[in-house]
Image (cartoon, rainbow, N blue to C red; front, side):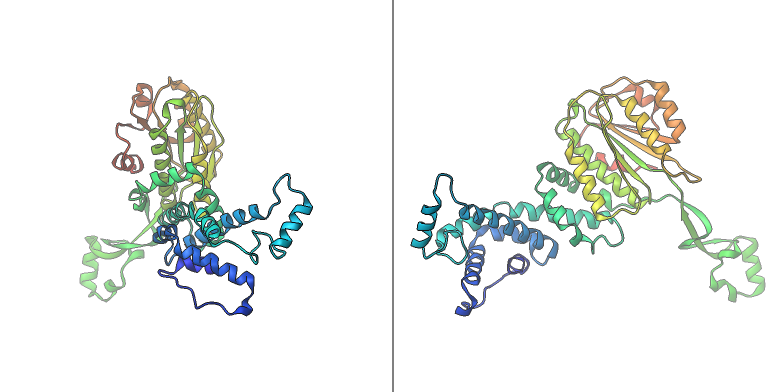
Length: 405
């Protein structure tokens, strides 16, 4: 708890010297805190942890875990040293080992270990802050902000993965896209209130119209000038299905940009209450991740981990990837209006079986949105509902990918 509040408080300060009855272990812990407060690495992490309980817990857990590991190494007997020699050395040191909290422990050695334990805390805290900001922006579930604490261990684990950090950094670059809300609606007298309009539908009449004189009321009714409640319902739509090319030619900035766009498309699926799927492919298709419309924070973290896990390499088979996506869509629960959107992100280096692709799209009632990164494919342009050629891997291009009707 002391370590947590050291990260959490803007300017933490220790109390006066502890009384002797605290014992040697408490004194040792105080020395750890003193070394922690003296470290410049603590203050580098402060911008991410101050007054933030989530990142403070992550930072404290990261620090304590690493410090405990360093202390445990000192307590292990070194190879080749006899038990008698260990006991003799213990007697010479007053019966306590060098690494035990109550023993004689050099101040300089302790400060070195605290400094070493702090080396990666700033990185962990920064990654946790990014995750929290993105979760808040994603709106992944009604209780997402309140549910952070349930995922702290998982956040700390994935924050230490280099590829996850790179995905998070790229997503931060297009975060403005994910604040947008795109929703397809249909008018319905049984829907929810969405504003006011003029018309003659008596089922939606505004209460203010009931006090109008009879002649004026019926004149307004006949000319569709009555003030009405506007009511809408979400149109039933199929999933957004992202196909990510991971062939060898997609290595580097191409696949990083594609991963960030996939996260932005997941944000759109949440806003539109649609299922979301993502699948990597090269010359073969790889296992997909499928997320329901009412996603939880853990689902977003699993998506980021999934996107970060795959390395670019291999050939390209776009036909097989689209057919697999169409088969997956056919297995999802179907409503009255089930137009689905397959977003293919590739550099386009492949020939297609046009007949197979067109048949797959028709069977699944899916529209193909093709995003070709720094390339061109005439076959894809011919069969795509929407075709884009991306030259510069930046936020403005990502906006065009995510904003479709």
